[in-house]
Each structure stands twice: as structure tokens, then as C-alpha cells.
Image (cartoon, rainbow, N blue to C red; front, side):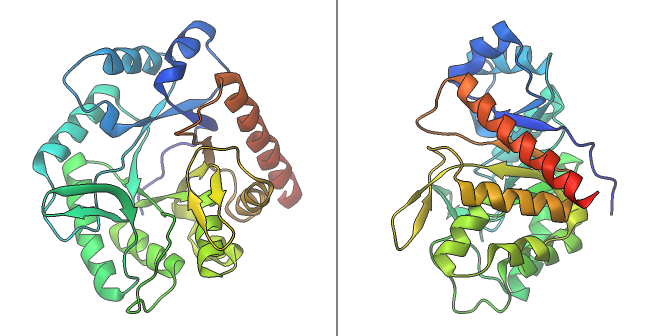
Length: 278
């Protein structure tokens, strides 16, 4: 296993609504996560602001369209633009989702789960290696929220993720909210998921809000983190150790100060969890 990048602390997703606030106030946020596809362009205001913020803060890149599990070949233009952006801003790391987002050149803009089988593991590992070789760096893969399962699945999601990470020598972005959502939808213990992933591979954690519809939960990123997810985050830190953590908010985006307050909650929970296991 290659040496992991250094931990970054506590960060926020970089959103256009907050560009000026960040540049004008220089907030006490350790790092920012940029959505890769928003900046894979030849120029314009997004790249202008990203370059300016990158001068003051570490940046990580997070994508939603790599479609690592798709059965169609990678789009070469996408990989070329992703690498070009990475070469420009030199992110601490690059992540995307362990899922598929479409076939035959059609992106349906949803993060769809994969069947948890040995055959799928082998296929995804080959695809991860292609991307890592092209980018010249390790890739972080994120667990997605799911609302359906496959009858052909022969292992748990965490066993599936573990196999891919070990065989491809890649890293993991553990989305604690997604674990909670999927555990609610599929009726498993979310702590089993956390216990089942290799701590040495977990490089980053996502925290977010969701929409509870009674019988099922939808991952929406449009609300604050709820108490059970905070509790699960504390458990994750107690089991995995200190991990770079960030808050995701993609809709109903509040004032920047509100997200900083939420990030401070994460910081406090992490510190408490680390002291408890020291």
C-alpha cells in the first residue's frame, strides 16, 4: 500500500454563493472540496475564483461523473479534462463515487449502486487501475446512498468496498450520512459498515443532511446533519482515528457562517471521540 496523503483537518464544500465571503474574510476552515465538473472548463469565473482560493487553502477534487462502474469505456475527453484540472490546482487528492451514472454516453446524473459480486469487484478494480495510471495518483472512492439492491449480490457493501480498495490499492471517502441512509433503507446496522471498512484506506469523511420519508430516506444534501448521523460520525472516528472531515450542502445553502458552525460541531465530536480512545 502506498503512503496516504497527509490529513487536512476540517473542510467545507466550495460553493459559488460563498466565493466572495471566503476571499474577503479568510475563514478558519482548513480546506475546501471543489466539485471537479464545475471547473473542467478552459477558463471563466469559476476557475478564476478557484485559483484565488487555492492560493490560500488546500483543495481536494470531488467528481460525480467518472462512472467507475459503467460497462462502457471511459470518456477520454473527461479523463483528459480531469487530469488537466488536477495538474493546474494540484489537489491534495481526487475522489469520485463507487457507482455507475449511465451507459452508451448517456449520463442520467444519478449515483446508481453496483451488484456486490466478485465479478464486479474484478471489473471495477481494472477500471480504477486505468484511472489511477492515467492520473498518476491514487483515487478515493465514495460509498453511495442506495434505494434498491441486486438479487445477485453475494457480499455486503462493506466487503465489496474492502475488496476493491485492497486489490486496486485505492483509498476511500467514507460518507457517514450515506451509510446511515442505506442502513435505514436496507435494514442493517450502520456500525457493521464502519467496522468492516479498512481504517488504513479511509482518507476522507463526508457529512450531510437528508430527507426522511418514513419508510425510506433520500440523500438530499439540503439540510443540517441530524443527531443519529453525528452519533455515527463519533463512532467512526473512535474506530478509524482522525480523518479529514467535511460538510456537504448542495441545496438550501445557508450563510457561510452557518456551515462553519456545523463544521465546529464535527470538530468537537472528533476531538471527544479521539480523547475517549486515547
